[in-house]
Every structure is written in structure tokens, then in C-alpha cells.
Picture (tube, rainbow, N blue to C red):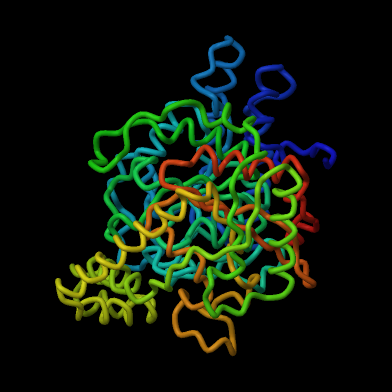
Length: 473
């Protein structure tokens, strides 16, 4: 294991909370360290739309008083957190990367996950960048520009939670709330060398309802799996505003981390059985992570799940949702949109109800196929992405032949269709020093098992990669 970081901005949420309890340092000291790092991260990568220093320090002082009195509000009291700028945050505009959104507000309501974090005493540092309305797998928008990668700011941080990925990687808060409708926490986490979990749909309450419907999830983006387990215990709290939320969580996510990997039935699929050119360095790193699981006692079999690429059905649902997002805009406002977004909205508006229902049929069949697969295997392991981060400001890699972002992220969106929990864990870097991620997919409701396997990879040292270069690491 590596030596523990000495800078407060580099500590995990779990370590910060333990330090507060032991009186080693205070929430105010941590907030100041993180705010300083946030300013540096913003200068290096453009990962924030807003940094709320005064509010954060005020919340940290209140947290310090609670810790001093021995009465913390919850397990993340005093821990700095950032929020993707698609998620409602009281007192701060949620601009969604769009010039069509008016900043004036009023902004009087927290989304459920933000509300639960505040109730637990978390310190909100600011809002992180997203592409316009979260429509694509990279982060650049007409309103806020391009977000760079912490390992090379000339490359993309991924998306659509790219600002959160860069912020966590650079120490601008150990916890961040992202959203994932087709890979949007896993893509940037893989590109930025951090952890992310797309939980089972409905496990983390979501409000307002996404125009992308039940494809969209809220999930933690963190330094490691232990921090994600900690965060999940807070943000899964019930909220009546989400009609599709699941019932109470059975058991503790943090306690589940200690469970064994030995005996788990792991299916390793290098490309889901599809004709996907996975970069050799990515394939090798993912195979190494699979070897670690086998070394820990998991029963590993190289096998594909026997599914076909559902990209056409995904596009029907995704593009229809995008068309719904902009339906209320007039011609002048539409002229302000990201041109790529405008293109898919035009396409989405042409789908019929029968087209949509046919896509739902594909989705249901895919869910049944994966349910059958998981009756034989506890986990499916794939590369998170077949490539590492490419040029910032582009939707697809130059010369790839892809026309939309889904072309280079074929391993993420299928599991939004099926609503399964899926996480990404760093498992190495390529020859340019860019992070590589391995994806762990569980059956629906097996979030704790996915976290347990991910935590085992961290404990085994598989996730130890060099520090980002953007701040001189």
C-alpha cells in the first residue's frame, strides 16, 4: 500500500471523518485546503462552474462546532463535496451547461442527494462542469467551454460528469455527485483515474425526473470504493419526490466491504463479444485486474454474456429524451445550442411512439438476458472503455470513424438500459500516462457486492496509479 497523503486536500472522506473525530485536524482546515486546491484545479482544467468559498467555510465552521461538541450530524459531517451542474443545489444556479438556462432563479431547492448530504453535514464546495444538458460522453459546453483531463489538460476529462471527475482527481473535494445516463460517471472516472458507481436504478432518489427517463442515475464519484460506500449510506435516504425510488437499503454498504471475494463467480468478457477494437494496453491492464480477483479466490471464467449491441435502441431513447429537453425552446434559443445536441434533438423529434416502444422491447429483452446471465455469475468484468482519453473539445477521437460518442463507449450504456449497478476502478495507465479503468457489473440490487469487489481491488493495490500531472504531480 502507498504512504498516506499528508495534504488535507488529498485525504479520503473516510480519513477526514476519522481525523475530525480524533481531533487531528478540523473541518475548517480541510475546507481551506480543498478550496485552495479547487481554485488550482479550475485554473488547470476548467472543472467548475462555481466555487462557493464563503458558503463552504461557513458550513465547515458549523461542522467544527458539532465535532467539538461530540455531536456530528452524520458520517460525512465536514467532508467537502462537489455537485455536478445538472443537480439542483439550493442557493446556486443549476445552469446545465446551456446558454438557454437563466441564472436568476430562484434556486430554492436541493435535489434529494444534495439534501441528504447537507443533512449529514457535508460541506458543498461548488458546482462542476457538464456538457449541455449532459447529452454526451465528453465535457464541453457552449456556456462553460472545455474541461481538460487532470493527467493532460489537452485531453478530455470524459463526460458527462467530467468536471466532477477532474475535481476529485485533483483533490478539490473527495466526494462528488454525478449523473449517469449512458456512462456519465464511469466514463470520466475511467479517464481521470478515480472510482465511480452507477447504482441500481432507483437506489439513489432523483428529482427532478430526468428527461432521459429511467436511463438516468445519480451516483458517487470518489477517491476509492470505501468512500463511495460511505457516500451511498447518505445519499440513498428516501425522498418522496422520486416516485420510482427503491425501498430501504438492507444492511450497510460500509460493512459489506469486508466481505470475501473468494468464491465469487466472475465472468470476464474482454469486449462483450462484440467487434470492438480494445487498445492493447487497456486490454492488458483489465486482464491484470481480473487476475487480481482470481488471486483473491474468485472463480473466473472468460465468457461473453451473449448479448447484441443495443446502441440503436439506446439512441432512440436518448435522442427522444434530448428532444424533450429542448421542446420548449424557440428558434432563437435553439440557435444557442451545442450543434451536436441540436442534431440529435432533430433526430429524436422524428421518432414515433411505436419506435420508442420498440426500443423499450429491446431494453426489456436485454434486461432478461442479463438477469439470466447473473443467475450463473455474480459479476461481469469488462474494460470500462476500450480507449484512454483523447483530444479535449471533440465528441469522438480523430480518425476513429465514429459519428457519436456512443461509438467509443460501447461497454457503458448497455447497463443503463438494464438498470444494473456498474462501477469503474483504476487499473493502470497507458504509455502516455493516461488512466485505464476496469468495469465491474452486478445483478440488479447487488450494489454492495460490486462495492465489495471494487474495494478488494483497492486493498490489493490494483488501483494505485500515478498522481495527476495537472498540478505538478
